[in-house]
Amino acid sequence: MNKLNKTAAILSTALTLSTVLAACGDSGSAGESTAPSASAAGASDVTAEENTIRFATQPGQIRTAINILADQLGYYEEEGVNVEFVNASSTEALTAITTNKKDVDVLGTGIVPDLTFIANGSDLVVFEGTAAEGGAIISRQDDVEKYKDLKNYAGTTAAMVRGSSSWVITRAKLVESGVDVDSIKLLEVDSQANVAQAVAKGEADLGFLPIEYANSTLDLGTALVYEVGELDPQYVCCRQVTSSQKLSEKHDAFVKYTVANLRAWEYYEDEANRPEIIKTLADFSGQTEDYVENYLFVNRTFLTLDPNEKGIETFYESLSDSGYFDGDAVDVDEHIDTDIYAEALQEVLDRDPDDAFFQDKLEVFRTYNNDVQI
Image (cartoon, rainbow, N blue to C red; front, side):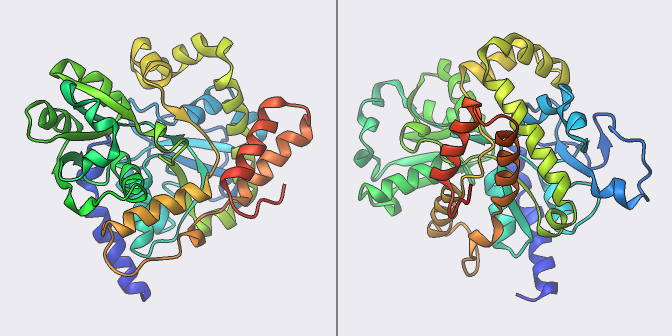
């Protein structure tokens, strides 16, 4: 694909993704800062620019809780990297990153938009995780036991928002189980609420949702069949992406950024910090403390920074096999960088080789990524 065609494809992708991304609650415009800069250096100072990472966020969003904590706890400043939070929707952020604008350097939400841009010729690179699992399958209450058996999915109608990660992962498991996935009628709707409504009204047998939506709509007469993580533990969900150019130009800043994130992850996983975490994220996002607690610790959102290269490969293959992308398949491994994470993980282990949390994350890294050298 030549450069002109790549650009056209990327811009086309940005437009077609708007419906999918709206379902994730994206809003806002690029460039509106939501947190003060840690550095007063001017934008024309090249050294300051190379040490600055602009992270896209959306109002009320707490899926990127680890990044928020790294900022609010002062870890970015302590590691010597200037991280600015900017208000940008996913489409705006991916377009800015792909075209190497200074507006945004990192987006840390949905994997499906990332892979769609990549499939259309963008320069995106996944270098870190944000969250894993987080999806659910629902049915009417009387059908839960029936749909515990994946073989009973053949011939059903399944409701989802287009590009649902819950469906992508379940589809791969259905193929593994020998189920004829082409016999399943897909009912694509425009919102998560309408997924639950379709199941409740009998318009669909099954619904594929983020876990928080699944649990919040049970009063409609639906019930949880599976958390999709039960079918595929630690399957990839939201990832952190940048461009290869930005990764090269700001390499040292990205390592420092990831060290700070690793420290915030350890803080997040310490149950003793939970009350302060809830308060910090509620204050930052404007959400209630009950909402934050339910989102992160009750309707469990599994946060992880591990890139999970193998999981990304599986996810991309499942999307590609389902005909989600137009055109020829790409080599998705060319769009995954595990070196930044490896350098940062090595750094925190060098500081404290006996840290049990980071020793565990090293084993996870070795399990879910290819050719790990540490």
